[in-house]
Image (cartoon, rainbow, N blue to C red):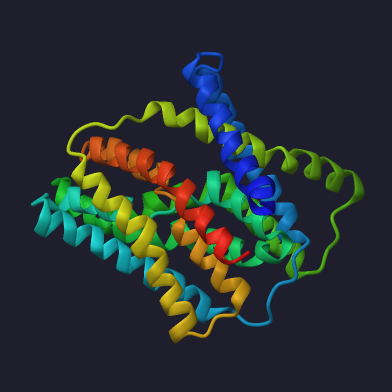
Length: 310
């Protein structure tokens, strides 16, 4: 009961309020666009900066933890691609979108609020380690697969340069980097800056959840429902299973870190997958439906995980 009242209802209840407000047009698309910009460009970067600055860094890079998560993630990516190739006979570009839908977690809008609410400060460092590497590791190979199958055939250096610029100009990256430097050099945040960053950072969680709930009204259950259901199964069941198996049975990751990795893997498909589908004009219906259905399914899967791990 404490898990329901303390974690599940606040997190998914805030999302539900955002969804209802958007459905009733109390909160329109323009307002949600402004709120999402505030969340991505201001609130979350500042929250990450402060959290990282107050976190003690490990003496060694947690290679086992990183290998557990990203090996499991690439396994889920491969499952999505293989499903697109052999089950649904999709093109290579479409396979890339399907692989991304089955492996790219919603780390920012849902992962940060949920994990920090559920596990508190001990989960901050393992969470931010994944966030710092997430897009950097996953987006280049996914982009190359889609580019290869889309017929655009842009030079590799052009694709990598565009990705590098995109990542380097992301406010979340700068928030993490600044906090990392503060922690590495054991610098204290000045009092006034700390107070301001704390207030703004505190708004990140409810605003992110409310905006995510409102944005779900943009997605519909359309097209071939079988494809999204297969991808939701890979994302919500196989992906966390792969990560858990690697973390606990192969790399011997500590309990707190393995649970955080498992929870991140169990997150629904990220909105970035639909952004990529729109950008390349492939698999848009499947991607949108997967985002919507995986978010709904995560209410059950994530709640079950929180019960199992207390």
